[in-house]
Image (tube, rainbow, N blue to C red; front, side, top):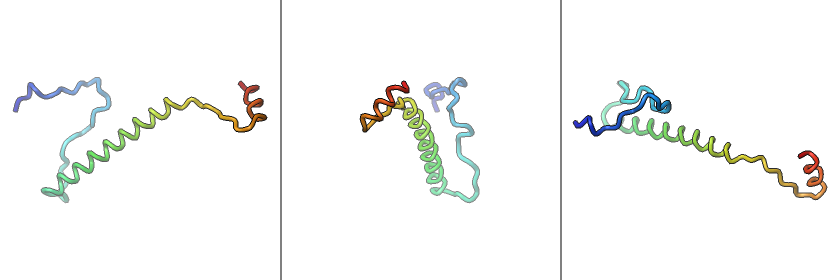
Length: 80
């Protein structure tokens, strides 16, 4: 193998997977092990995307209030 061509993970990257690699689970063998590992990867990707989208949604929240009635609009203007 050419180890020179492979990317090196920096210690400063805090979001790297911990304990990455195959696990010694005797219940899973052969093709089932590959399928199980892929399910774990998909689950981890889904979890991280959920975290990313939660942050993106939070950043876009500007707390805009829309008044449907003119009387409410006057009261909202006084609170500002």
